[in-house]
Length: 256
Image: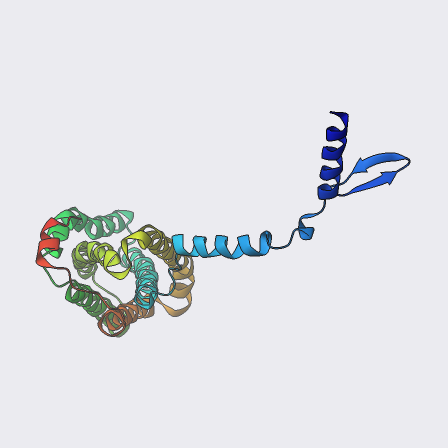
């Protein structure tokens, strides 16, 4: 019995390594680097499994182009918002007039659910392009009129705010509806996070730089710049962004 125990101890010592320190028998564990084949094989398998579970989202070119176009158009929208606010206060000097302008701009948002229902029956690419072109025409017209006349009548500003809100009631649901067509379902959550982050950063930068731009270059040029961003967005949707069509049965069952 005692011999079997001694043999077992010697076998463990040969596996773990042994040595004599100060006359005592001490076992020492061999480092992991002495056990070839463990980590070099495990790391590639782990990396391959992670890449298969979380595939890179940046290889969707249409998604990246679309995100950039949405972000720069939102940046321009923030600039035009600052410019219109400045024009209202400059022409009327009334905070009430500014509040009315903002209310008219946000009033059409109540139509967004209705627009979302109709989007399922329309060509999404054409909706995105037409809303971008409508916004471009509106902002370029306002900027050109303000540049030529030197001012804008308050009634014209109110009408422009209402029209811009009406176009936004269609363009914003259309932008949300485009996302599931640009990425597969397993990447939709991350793509939605990228869209939200891009929009928030663009709006923040637009509001931060809008005041400086209006102060240095004037409100008309800010409106013109916003119109140009919408033109680029329409061009991106028409040329570079690929939006596959949804079958009629899928449209009827979809809801936004």
